[in-house]
Image 1 (cartoon, rainbow, N blue to C red):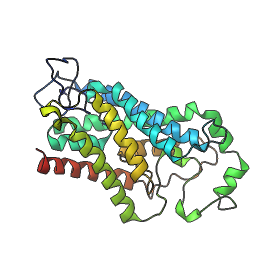
Image 2 (spheres, rainbow, N blue to C red; image 1 turned 90 degrees about the horizontal axis):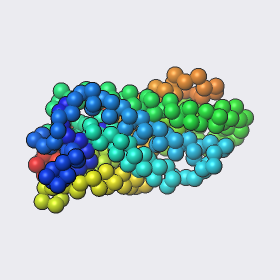
Image 3 (cartoon, helix red, strand yellow; image 1 turned 180 degrees about the vertical axis):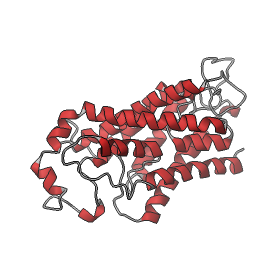
Image 4 (cartoon, one colour; image 1 turned 60 degrees about the vertical axis):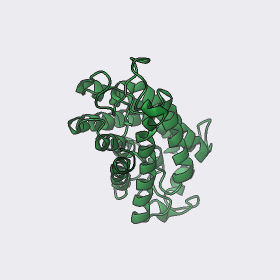
Length: 295
């Protein structure tokens, strides 16, 4: 989710003779050149929308003064899937990576130059910061009400209502809207879970172009990736909340730390490296698996 390459990173190969306006970011010899500024702007806007909608569904489910309160994990999984779908279509010009793990996998596959990777990373992180701020603005009243609710504050101070205080040390009552956290804290398991889930995501993206005699799946690839993200959330998201994207977690966590929110609690920086390092490792491994198995 993640200059001179064509752009829809979610599909490798529609026939340009039939669809000259559709681009394919990880094919080095096809498409129209895209400048570094275009990559940065496209990734910034697309990732901002991704985080806005993804964080938005988390906020909607979390806040008691929200019409979607307690809608549950299925709503969150589908909400993030639709967030990927929307952000990816918006960011088609740059290839719609929206995710450093995807960028790494595509670079290892040979779809972009390594010199372009920092530009993608910068746009993705900046967009994630913007998206998290927009979630706060969209739910401003709910944040204020939630963080001054005595029942909410009592629960997160370890009093009645806190299911397991040890499960989320230093995590405030709204941190889950911004970033992920594990249900069981085990560094090895949490890291492995993020690696496995990210391998599934990135490998699915990299192999989309293997169908239809190498012509890929066209624009429908974006929808397929969104469904993959939804499936990962439903099947592999339970242990850690499935960051599967370093900036999706890091950017909003930074915003949580900086926002002037009363009673917001800590940002759990002790865990923060796992949803960054795990997806990066997973993206690199997926690129390696692709090269060994499919290239």
